[in-house]
Length: 211
Image 1 (cartoon, one colour):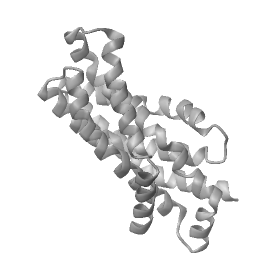
Image 2 (image 1 turned 90 degrees about the horizontal axis):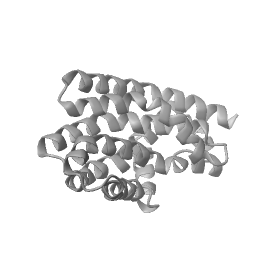
Image 3 (image 1 turned 90 degrees about the vertical axis):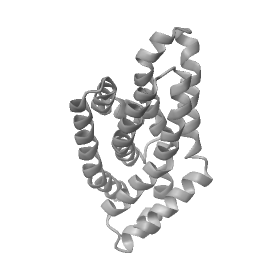
């Protein structure tokens, strides 16, 4: 499993799949103040929600590279033929996807929060929320990638599938910005549930796609 994680992580970095989400995340935070105006109070009030929405969209950018290339090249067939369970393959892809985009995203939240005029306390809550919530976002991206691996235009379809499912994460993540521990606990529970179930759902989709 460690070898699979290293392989997918190396491919993400070499192929630019790890940098594009961060670039998109920063681009959203740079352009957003131009759209709503220079009102510092307004930016500070809605900036946390903007960062969460940008994080969700950033997690979807490399979705077409998570499963489809390995399916087309026969790598998945070879792994399963060698006795690697599909759930293990999916779990390795989930870990690699999170490691590729989440740590750089957490680092990018520092300049992004400054652009939106967020306080240090708000930044700390955002960082904690993203640390807890990004595994859930990665899990949703992986499941959607596995379900749409055989379809053309998977990126557009992925957005339609993931956005409704990600609403609880966005609600609880934005709710945690008000300092409520209840929203943070619900965010952690939702993210944990998604991470626990994603390898089995994605693994079943991978096996079904190869039959």
